[in-house]
Figure (cartoon, rainbow, N blue to C red):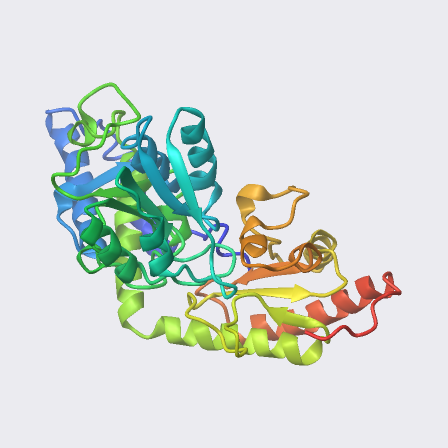
Length: 386
């Protein structure tokens, strides 16, 4: 139940990668026949990822993952004196880079979300300044699963003539991504969030977008990212993208959303004093990726609950895996207006696409009992309402 942290390799992905470790091991930049065999694997993967994003193959730049893609988008474009707009609910790859940019003279506006976790495109418009050079917004939040209206944000950016970067790491494979419909110039994805290998990702760079490479050296990736290509990883990424494209079309995500909804409603029915982070003002849920729910359990410390569930063989998260061990509550939930006590009492459940009804039944057995045991250690709890 922690798929948003990472996913396993699918068998077909592993099978596609295997020849490139031993049989076709050559450097893809070499001009001899073995090198060109490796190059064909990279080129095919580039076409697969381009098809997945709805862009030209030449606009796909392979890299080490979402963090590098986010860093390249921001640090490769922004300079002292520029104005940058992002949001208060971004991944640490954006927020930490943003803090660095502020220290070197970039002006930053962080737009707050609505209480349901959505970013109002008009709030982005209101933050625009004459010196605004870049807007960066995540497509789907890694903690709540809330999906942003990136198309509307794209129109705001286009009307203002501002470059738009989308962090689509948690959206990839869960919602369709068409860069033309979004209207972005830059977009980051990572293979290991979509059943591909760790350590490989891609940055979409629209043709004509001027951006500096962070990694200097040889002429790899059309001089946009130096370094010998990770051929097996890239080949696996391409295969994962092709499989994800089919999954988006075959209705598998509807089945996954139904499992998530059964899990969510089952926990709410069985446990008093809990609720979903990512609801609208009337109690309904906003658009979310199919596999994710974020639930608060009043009067329970989320770290203690994570440990208790782990001892029962259930893996969940108190937030982003990149903040594992952090003592502060989720910055995403705090930005949404969730108070610190409830933010500290919240867990993220994120289902693998291989999840079954039996998996959900197991969770519905384990979690209520664990919450009850922990609450027994908190006498002040008296069935607080959700």
